[in-house]
Image (cartoon, rainbow, N blue to C red; front, side, top):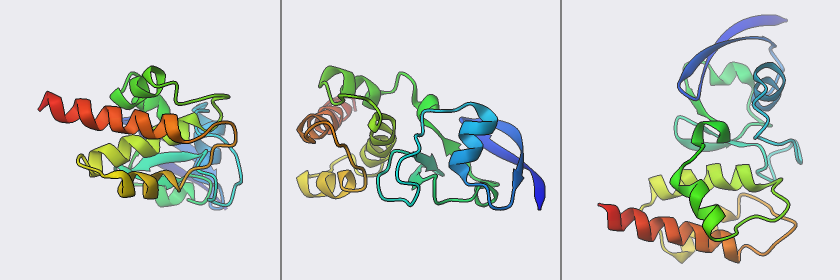
Length: 154
């Protein structure tokens, strides 16, 4: 069965024609050319496809597009120039870059949900994403950099 949906993606209402079984990941990539969310495991383990749904990190490979109706979806493209993205650059928190969009989206949600996050909270949140190229030290440092600078701005 095919249906037409209106999805709010990066603050813009967009129309999609989907099968009821189409994932949010497939819809974002194939219909809207938003390719920052990556196909990885396709079963919710790796986090390469992470997007924000109502400001919460969601693995878009295991969410159906029809489940995203009436929700606000933010992709890595919607976070362009964000403080977290800048921190990843400053702290060299990437290597090949495949997992980076998912980490940035997840870390963006982390620093907004827990502006006073301690090491334990950071570790817990980072455990939802997998990087095969590098240690997580640089990513942790990027999160801590954002938390320090974000708290100084207030």
